[in-house]
Length: 391
Image (cartoon, rainbow, N blue to C red; front, top):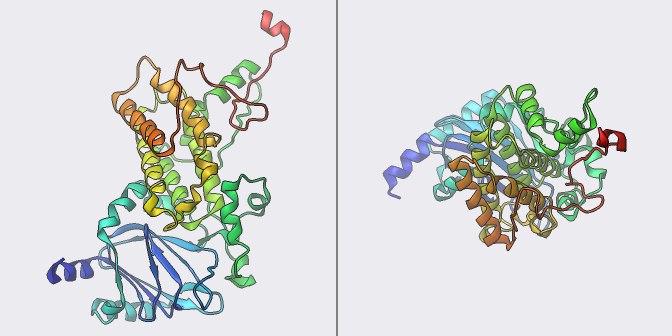
């Protein structure tokens, strides 16, 4: 890149100015990680828009790291975001408005230019594919009070629940060095994720109708879209991306469980993809395709939390394999399917088969689907008594 082009990007791009950050601290933005050296004071040339910033303090030798703390930003051209390291709480804190104005002007005068690491624009496309539905409205709706996201403030119920190995990885971080004072912890709250019921319960309907509602989550999806998302499909997809980013990069168990709930909901719909929500499902398949394609790339493993995509998620016993198998069975054998949705679903199926070695033996919408006893992915079936069956 020539100097003139670089200067233009420096002036019009977003800048993160991080002051007094200790050496060896891990600082990251989107899919890019920086290890703090003696001269590091932040990141420059960041494209305007939404980004996820996260960091982890380390021991003096740089071998042990505390739980990750992250926050989303939605920044405009030439904006400067200033944070200063709080030594006692081991976290980045905001500065006063007066200080922010003074430091922002210094950045614009290029006084910190040599101490700022450049954002790698080649990797920006990766981030855009993972976050194109994460808007300012999505962030404001979901982020915790104060904006900081960390596993340290995750709900005790989530932490104490029975976990598969996949869900234990973020938990282990809590046993690493104590990275915040008790005062700081008490003020931090979790994200405001939408509550997604796993089982639909309705009063005043027959057992057969209740079974139907749980076999096909279309009605639940429609209810949630109206009640929680204001009718916006993109807000739902934004939450799906938000949760995946916080899980993958922030290593949040709560975020993984929310991502899992949303994936279960969408893959659990059999009517919506054919009739009412074809466009939503076309976009959804593209979103989850991009998420897994990025997360499963070997050169990313260990870089941004991708190592969390371990065998418990990508094995043939995982929830993902179960729900994908059922969805593929109903969609790919359908007589009337939207062309774009069919094309994207086939590409997604090919990704799973080529990257994970999964096999999907598709027959009819019923053939090849089985559920073991106590299978949490099995549909809820309401058993009717003999008289009801005869009638």
